[in-house]
Amino acid sequence: MRVIARLDLKQEYVIKPIQFEGLRKVGKPDNLAKKYYKSGADELILINVVNTLYRTSWIEKFVSTISKEIFIPITVGGGITSVQQAAKFFQYGADKIALCSALFEDKLLLKNLSKEFGSQSVVASIQANKVGDNWYAFKEMARVNTKKKVFDWIKECIDNGAGEILLTSVRRDGLMKGLDIEMFNEFCDICSVPLIISGGFKEIQNLKSLKKMPDAISVSSALHFDKTTPQKIKNYE
Image 1 (spheres, rainbow, N blue to C red):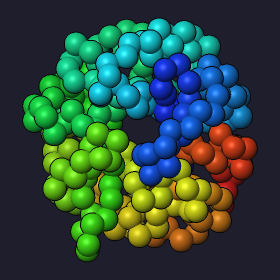
Image 2 (cartoon, rainbow, N blue to C red):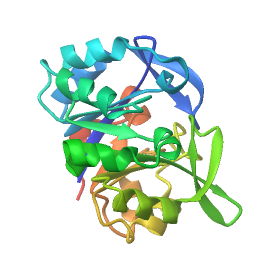
Image 3 (cartoon, helix red, strand yellow):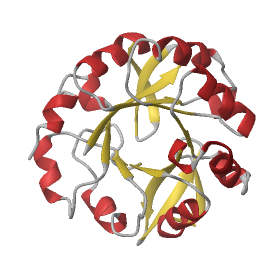
């Protein structure tokens, strides 16, 4: 199981929302990226959380700099809406790109990106929340319910070329109350590509409740607030 350190970025700071709301500064991205790299992270995910709405560009420079200082795969997401934008990040040193909201606006985007860069470089990020008895995919920092059921959306993303699925539980995000076991167990068997589970990680013991181990786990708050380290999570048996 890969352990992926996630950095949510806003205006040159790492921030941490709770359930995608109430952004709180937790540090500088270069410091935290190096810290997690040295403490055993297998990969890094950088999500520019305001890019979809406000179109900031400083993250391009940061990716170019940090990719020369840490030597693990870097995934970049936030506001990428075209093959041309994605190409820039690959040129700056990103290994993968993650997309969420844009996939609902441009039905061909995922296919075009997969064709251009290979499916192994494209991650479909799904903000999942349960409404009534069903799980739905949300967009725009979980503000908008797309009305697309997560079950159907995972399959559609894979059919269109996604090489990985990043599945984040909106209701557990940032709370550090444990992974959303119900969500993961609901979808782990239908995902034919590597599945990254995200949202709410608290302690290693929580993994015992999973029906099967995920391909990867994305962790942010538990790392930011020194509750654990990537290496400690990887040592779990």
